[in-house]
Image (cartoon, rainbow, N blue to C red):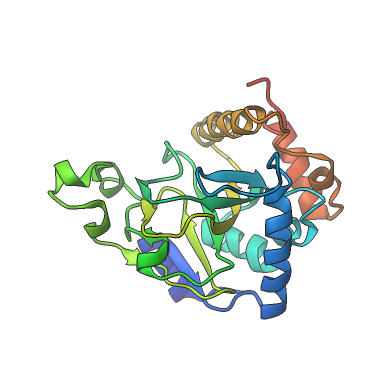
Amino acid sequence: MKLSEQQLRLFRDFGFLVFRQYLSPEEIAQYSREFNAGLDSWLEDGKHDGKTRHYASLMEEKSPFIAGLADDPRFADVAEQLLGKDVLAIAVDGNYHVDDTLWHPDTGSLDYTAVKFCIYPDPLTADSGALRVIPGSHRDPFHSQISREPETAYNLAQTDVPAYAFESQPGDVLAFNVALWHAAFGGARSRRQGVVVYYEDPDTPSARTAIQQQMRGNHRAFASVGRQMYGPHWRSIDTPRHQRWIRRLAELDVLETDI
């Protein structure tokens, strides 16, 4: 899939791009089945209790279709176009969300670029947990000016911060720069969200350092639940691009870390 100049400009200027019905009904049905099996396999009793957010990797053998989306040209090729350079597939995972997600970006550094594709297997509206993004907030000075406490900074409720709401039907996909400020409100407990994440392949010392720091945090999250971030299934996917990702992560010393 080749993006238009207008799409590339929209992503560059506003920090996100919407793809309607990007996955077919058959693909979403398979996605939904594997999503539940993959996330539930990380739970002691195999069922989410709806009380706290539950995160799990979908790069394992219980979710081969979902893991394979990282290699799908609709994601990998598009990520390269959006970032304008080679990318590294970093994560394919899922969440059962609980309650509101307050305003935040997904990185603490603007020294590297990354894109996250969000997939929601269930219909969502602005009032039922659809992801909201603040257009243009992925770049400074705007990025650094935004407050995590809009009640104090702007006399606005979290839900009243000006934003675009990604209201979606199953099959729709949102791609956004991980530095973009985003939030979600009003969603049901066990709200399902899947993501595919790519980082730029760093070609500057500052980008390399920022990615290494971010990856140490990623590995810590897995280690905290006794898991390995990149298991046998993920490492065994035998395509040239995927194996290049594995080799490059090892070169950057982030395929495995001592944390």
